[in-house]
Image (cartoon, rainbow, N blue to C red; front, side, top):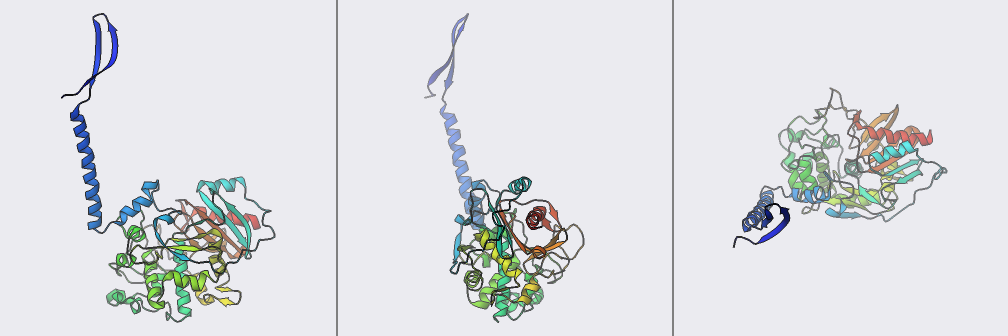
Length: 419
């Protein structure tokens, strides 16, 4: 059977009737079937290949990014990961500032916030909520990913562990906790080098490289196993490069030193002590059960502000010292190691990074902050006693003094309310 004939067009011509016919050929169907089978085989072999080469993390990455229309992790990806719950068991409501509800941002300021898909913009002054704006159907109970803001939380926990005697000091060798670092250049590595992103370990920080360390760490199964192959290649302390693997090692040290998970320790020493109103969540690797300490901490904008408040008060809230003022001061002291990062534009020493905290100045006003991948910020500006919280989907690609330029605009917007 060659097919059946279907008349398509009837046309009246001088020579008589003529018909155009369409033949549904079985050969075409066979070709289509072969193409579909070939694609299926290709996909199956691709999946097998990813598993065989230890790159199965790419499948999870595709599920939570490209398959939902994103090119990289976003602030609402919590549903794609195993999570540790950090209970808010001693909640305290933020006091309202006397001017709360009386102030508003301008239309131009709102347009700027909208241009980077802002979801929350909050300003606090003198431990009181001054301004609160939410966008894109979010509200005060919305939790979102903070990405690298989580690094600052780990930095705080290191200080707590030192205060409690689990760690001797920031100068203690990493090999005391991780024996695989006991030889050669590795033996020179200290906790301080990790805190200051000056370890000399070439982790790489590109989220755009699906085969790189950060993609494996974020989407992979076992964070400790992924990190094991990385060792010191240049003199620790000889240069600054921002790389999340340093924070992973800090997380491992906390686990070894305290005998507890990072989430448990953070809950007991910080979250239950700062008045957090909502539960927080920390992204876990699938097999090892370790928090992805370099990222993946989810909380509300109001509760994130409490971490700024803690450092604004030098680690002391009320009568409780949660982390020593001396450690807070050290955390906010620039490391001043030479910038050897791939993005450096000139020879300079790092004046913008301390112990997992960022710092800078805006129009002559010093600030320090927690900072995340898509423009998540908690910024403290001491000159005005303000804390600025901004959550959202995007940040500016332009940089000024090692920060995205949108950060400065958020600070200026907050200052305009209290100036």
